[in-house]
Amino acid sequence: MPRFGSVRPKHLIEEAAADDGSVTNIDLGSNALFKMKTFEYCMMLAESLASNHSVTTLNLCGNEITDVDCEWIKKLLQSNTSITSLNLEGNKVSSDGCALIAEGLAGNSSLTALNLLNQGPFGESCMDSWLETFNSNITLTDLKWRISSRSSFALNAALTRNRSIQRLRAAGKDWRTLLPDGLRE
Image 1 (spheres, rainbow, N blue to C red):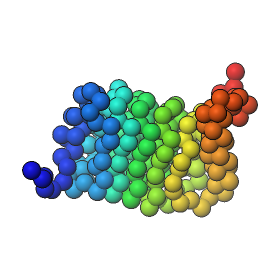
Image 2: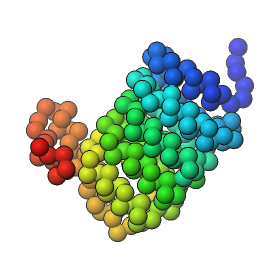
Image 3: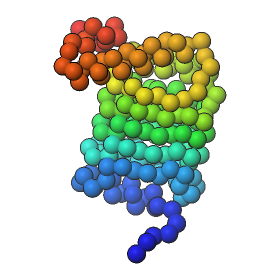
């Protein structure tokens, strides 16, 4: 029997928390229920996915997520090791929230794709946070956003470096020479 209406975020988050492998994709994009309680649902996601090993894709686009909610996104990114794709397109994230996301990615080793389109504008302090993140993150290879910053060349260079590292790793070739200085032994 078909279901009508929005997916219930709480139900989907609880299913993912079980971490039994049945949930690999969480799609809460433009979810009317999520929009009503973004802080609560971001907190629930961060807590339930902290030790989850099966969810690889998280779509939270168009949910009116704000900078305050990004504190939970940061915690999620710091603790989860299975999410490879995160879509935050079309929310209400500004420089402060974007900087929190960058801080969360600093130690993350699983996320390869992040969509931050239709946000901002992002300021120079936010770009500084991203440059700092790329000193320790070598897995993010696909970052979608619109920026106009003096730092855009350095950010693109870091993304290109990460792509090269992943390509060389996959080919079984030496990639350690491309590591940022802070990660070299």
